[in-house]
View 1 (cartoon, rainbow, N blue to C red):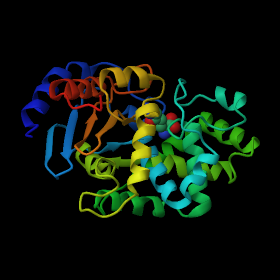
View 2: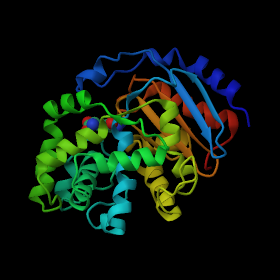
View 3: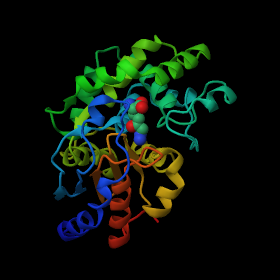
Length: 303
Ligand code: DON
């Protein structure tokens, strides 16, 4: 299928909304990007690539990186990860800590910040590194050795990560976090600072549309892990907007406060959109609309 015309239509319909919403102002370099950019890319499992607008512009992927971190952790520690984090939707904001107190410190899922911190902690215990182990995994998933962190973004977030430090120390107090909370925060901020374009993200997430295989056919994760990660994205990937997103879009997806959203139709394609204007729940307004138009115009959703 040629998606060129559909992406062009979607971009035209979404560009007005790209000037709405709020950028993530608590991480200075993200606030500097401003409202207005709109890019969208789609990559089929056969390797055809389509794009429109600012699809080649790199941006901070932020919580989208949590999916790559989870895939990496599952490869390192297998199902043991699920003894320390759940896989249920939270129904709370991504940075909430309220459920930790009522649920003995076990985060509802690995997509909320508390859960992602536990995943990072498990990864550091299994592969102590300065982030090179994760980066090698991400580069292998994308078949792209040029991908990297934006350490200026990582440093900017570290300086203001008071809420996440509170989460990390509370997790430590419950004995759920086993490593040094500040080392986990450092690794988490570095992970979230991964910088990619829409087109690069489509390649990096291809393994989730290809039952674990990268664009070149290299094994990234097992088919079982790919299935499970897609399921967690469907139920938890856009936090307390998961129900509305499933209703409107109907794809497993993961958002980031940099304004990106990656969506997967297993066996068919990966679609990525970038527009920094966020809604009240931290998901891109124009990005969500673009993905809703994609699945509506093509009829290609999991439903
Ligand atoms: O921890 C934070 O606040 C950011 N590094 C990531 C949050 C995020 O992307 C939420 N997703 N929409």
